Image 1: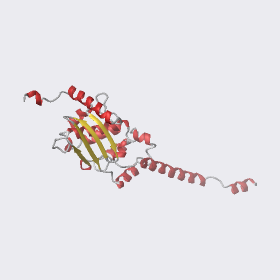
Image 2: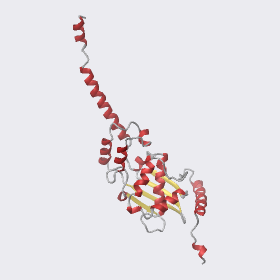
Image 3: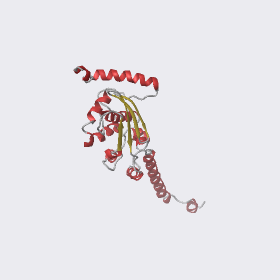
Image 4: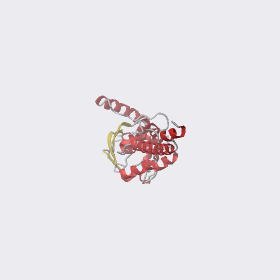
Length: 235
C-alpha cells in the first residue's frame, strides 16, 4: 500500500465529501439541520459568543477544541438538533459519525437565585434573547460554577468514531455548532438547560407591579376623601 492510501484529505476534499453526504442525508430526512457558517466568525450574538467562551476557558477541552472549530467552519456538521438536555448531531469525518451530548439540567434553586438577582431589570424575552441586559447580568450568567453555562462535569459526550478521547474533534465540532445555532435561536439555550426563560421576565414584572402598588398607596394617602371635600366646600 502506497503513501497515497493514508493521505489526509485536503480541506477542499473534506468539504466536497461533506456536501455529497449532506445531499444523501437530506433525501432520507428533508428536515435535516446542517450548520452553515457565513464569514470567518462562528457566531456574532451574545449567547453564541458566550457559549464558545465557556467552552474555551476549560483546560479539559483545550487539546481538541481547535479541530472542532475548523470542522464547523468548513461545513462538516451535517445535522444538529437541540432538545431538552440533549444535543444530537451528525458530523462528516472519515465517515459520518453520530454524536450525542447530554447536558445536565440547571438546578432549580440556582436558576431561581439568578432570576432573583435579575428581577426588575429585563423587560422582555426579546431583550433577553438579543443579549440586551445590563453588563453585570452577563457576568452573572457566565460565572463559573454558579452561572447558567455548563461546566465539563455537566457535559456528557458520546461519539461512535474510533477516537479514544472523551472529546473527539467531532464532538468539539458539534459543541461549536451549538454556538452557531444559538445565533439563530438564542432561546434554545434555555431549552438545552431545562429552564424557563419566562421566569426572568416574570420576576421583573412582579417587581414592577409591587413598585407600582407602593407608589399608588403613597399617592392615595395624599388624596382627600370625598366626604372631607364636601365638608370643606359645604357640599
